[in-house]
Image (cartoon, rainbow, N blue to C red; front, side, top):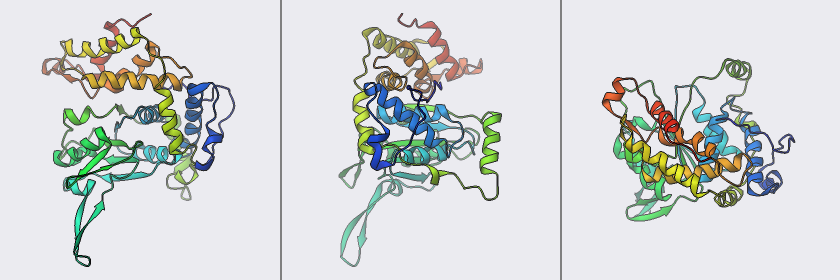
Amino acid sequence: MDRGDGDPGGAPPTSGVAGGAAEGVTDQGGAAGEVRRLQALLAAEMDKAVVGQAETRRLLLIALLAGGHVLLEGPPGTAKTLAARAFASALSLKFGRIQFTPDLMPGDVLGSNLFNFQTSSFELQLGPIFTQILLADEINRTPPKTQAALLEAMNERSVTIDGDSRSLGETFMVVATQNPIEHQGTYPLPEAQLDRFLFKHVLDYPEREDELRIVRTHGAPDAAADGLAEVSAVAAESEVLRLRDRVAEARMSDEIAAYVVDLARATRENAALQAGVSPRAAAMLARAARVSAALDGRDFVIPDDVKTLAKPVFRHRVMVSPTAEIDGVTPDAAVDRILTLVEPPR
């Protein structure tokens, strides 16, 4: 998926701090030029802490600008947490982290009203969910009741505590992680919760050259713990929100919209799949494709924008039938098959 993070003008990226975001992200070629410029600046900064991970970085940026959330699945030690922290730092967004455990309660996530004996009144103690980029670490290790505490937050960007609704802000985004190896003592996410995630991105171990760079950079006794101190902010929250509004204006032809719908409907009609994707998935794929077009320097969507994002949008929403699963069919394989069967517009 990595189609390059370089500046379209060929100039080396220069980072600016939050106060100088207007300098770092300039209007060069309209919204698409601005977004691509931001992508280049973000890549340069995140690369100071996270080696490789170009696809992860791209999907995180698409999700933020599309107003979605991301589920990262990969073995331990593949920089899932570090990528989320570096992403938040580079965009001047407040970062919060919750370690999900079997004994975690909804109040530990949302907050609760506690009685203050000195004032003889209840006072609201806000939970860690009140942030901008929330890392839900090992989300599948907490019971469904606590997982469900995130549903309203992810869908409405607000939470209700004792009948009182509180906004989380427009840039609120959940980056959840889960370990695909250790399943003992875990609680698989229900379909309703999975459908709230725009992307499910599967990470693997790095390539040899990237791993060699990791060892050289972080393997020395005097090496910085994570390199986050070197990451500078390249945009302010207001800049992110402005670009979100602008990328939504990217043109999508009726033929491309029909292609998105046909892909979604094909998942519901495929014999290998017990359940297909929801209309919400189709709408989110279209929204993400607009951002992808802008990241590639275009103000219009092409079929490749849709095809490239179909797998991370669909893989966690489809359910392989038991018979097909016995035959070795995986969600990714089923989506790949659908992409070959549904003819894209020319």
